[in-house]
Image (cartoon, rainbow, N blue to C red; front, side):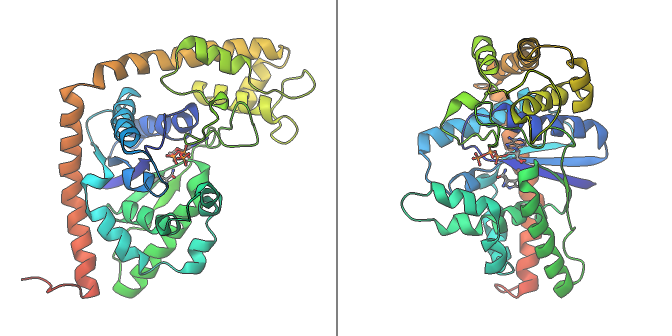
Length: 333
Ligand code: ATP
Ligand code: LTN
């Protein structure tokens, strides 16, 4: 069976950006890729590449697991697990560092942006992050990797590393392809439409978190930054605020941004915002209800145990195989 792999860092509360750019897409892919097995993990090893409080991290790991499921992922053909519980990720990450060049890592946009957030020196793990991420994907021989636009560069590097190893050892890894949604791959902050809606951003007025109450959701959308003029049309450069709202709406409705823009072409900003707020509340209410059932349940722990055991089997085998190819240890005995 072919594999689809993806991960999310437990660095903060899940927001609408991650939901629309990533989780909603997984849920739909589970239906359209009905012959694939999904490995979805909570990337806690990636979360510690910048300092993070341990209690906060613990809480976010569980919250993220419950939210992943609450968003509608089905149990069949799914292994949901926590990255650090499958040590082969660290092992493979290290092996792949030996095949990743400094120049490649220096070019990574995420590194350049994130290193600005490091106040006590830049951890070297932030620099080698892409090798760990390549390991996450290549361990499972993933054919597809659903991610938002911001991860495209990391995926390209993963493909280069895989190809480099394949050239040396024959067809060892499946070279993965990113699956980037057509709409929703770049949701911007409601307060700063030029910036990505990011969960580790401490300024929360530009986010809608998946667990926000309806009155907060309404307030955030009502106060979203809009552009001068009063016309509603999709124009990322000229009207970034309105274009972001249209993108959010279109992704929720599974239609094109043009279709939403046409629906509101004669409306006011206020009408668009009011309708969008209700649409977001409608989307998130059932997710929040299911989340409350799951968060402290036995079911959640059982699902994570099962996911970990399934991931361990595949990942250990692949990491051991590469170690042998490289001549590590005593080989097969
Ligand atoms: P951090 O702020 O800690 O860097 P993040 O908010 O960028 O985190 P990730 O865990 O890095 O979130 O991303 C999880 C997935 O969601 C990735 O596939 C990423 O591409 C996607 N994603 C994150 N933010 C957005 C966004 N604003 N729009 C679309 N997709 C997004
Ligand atoms: N780097 C990603 C999170 C991530 C990931 C992965 C995504 C870590 N490992 C493997 C897909 C596949 C991020 O910052 N969003």
